[in-house]
Image (tube, rainbow, N blue to C red):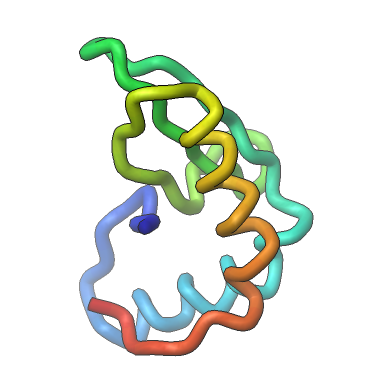
Amino acid sequence: MAWAGESFYSTSNAQRAAAAFKAGAKTARYEVYKDLGGDYRWRAWRGSDKVAASGEAFSSEWASRSAAENVRDNAGSATGAAA
């Protein structure tokens, strides 16, 4: 599961951002980190200063890294509507 690193004022803006992330998911920079609660999370960076997507909390670094790799490898072919 992933969500956008920002909020959107309209559905069309959210859909445009989702399409842009899907197109660049393979080349985005992914980071796995430990949050303040001690859980591991991942985030994908668009450019050098904007988080494009981030993931839920995981109890292990391995699980978080695996989730990020899954997003990187599969986001481009994902289907569905923005929620």
